[in-house]
Length: 617
Image (cartoon, rainbow, N blue to C red; front, side, top):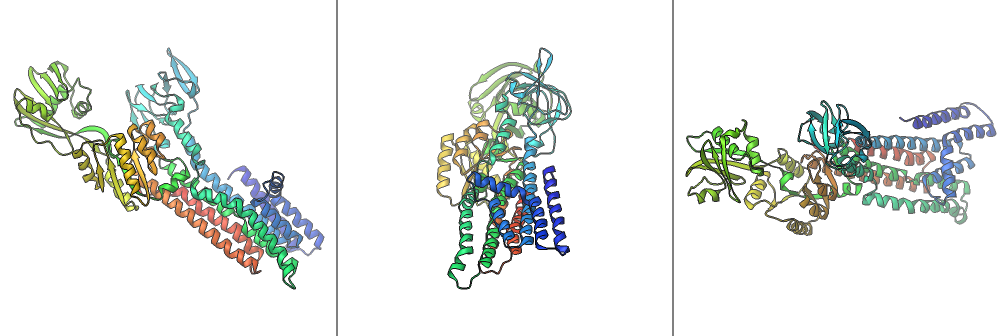
């Protein structure tokens, strides 16, 4: 609890203690009135002041005005205790609201702590401490253990482990060494690093995350906009209704007493205060965004949270989204008398000087060290492969067409794989299967999505038909569209959108996904390795690149919307009932206090639950 909140609590306790005197002791009306007024001003002077300022500035009809009008009216009717109760309980509700909002803001503030305070630039060996915004691309910076990486870059020297939890929600540290790409906002845990800066601060990961968080609350959901408009017209309407309730019955109904109807009108005013809706609905969305942030999911606004809650079709990109986006060796198939180890060694020596992704994957799979002395003449065969001299023998390595051009019939290509065949002097040596493997959590993530209510899972990919269909079969997807260019993906998305009743989410990570991310009802970008264009176009960013975070995001969105709807129905239902009872004189001031403050407190407690929503783990 903050110091300000503690001061308010002390005021309320003091006011309540003062009220005990006239209740416990017998005294005249004037001293009794004086004591209650003293307690009243201690408890509610700020409400009266805000009400006065609102009148001066032309913003009359707010909750402060309603509370001031109702309590002053109760004093004029001689209902001192009821007036005090309304003010004290109203302030208790406001105090509780302040605490709840503070707790929600702190969950967002945890993300804001990733802002770096300084960067240490190395200039001819000298260290210079600068604001991160003053560091340029290409500069070398020094990051010591315990310091936050201030800018995105590539490690030049040093080995360390990084705490990425503030960005990704992942508690397990990640290793980094020379050549590794590191992003701003991570904490260097162990070693000293020198890093070459690759992005200016304004384009860095941490700056973009902070911008997303800071602007999230500016994008309101439809229900929030409705509540804002509702309160704008609702408050003056109920004030006019209260005035009519106070003065029309005594004028129109014979024997009706003005004092009785004024008291009913005051009850009506207390009940009608829209605090429960005006506070709990935005607080629910704010809590949902904060809870998602704790899981490494950045939602750019409560409007996207609302759209996400109604998604029933998810469309995936393949490479880098469902798959790792990197080739790896998935099978080695030697011909006698070669062993797997011997075939892989030959392939690694042949591919040593190639920068092709397939060549890099073969080298990554080779556990030994390439001996450059074994490698002789190398001939590049564009579009087919290589001819390399290894240990004095000519090895041909490449695709099926290359083998057939040499008069060799290779083994059948495996579905979903790229085959690298090897031959020596007209003799077939075997093949190595290379594939872009699926992410380990892809199948489980899609299962969880279906469990959470997703009806269709679709894949759009530029890969070949065989590779795309094999991936879709492994993941049990409903549809797959292959060999698509970026514009083809947009056309397919348009077709999917036309046939849908619910919302459509698109999940992607590359530059070519940006147009589709923008066209979908809600775009979800894989943020840790995804392109800047994709992250910019998306509405939701998964900072840890884990597909399992998508069902978590959808569960958070749906539970948040459930809580919002619960608060709206509960608040309007109770208030409507007590308003009706107030009109017929069946509700006392105490019932009115519950219908206002009690309902607000219950709605706020319910809204706080969004902070603890974790989705499916």
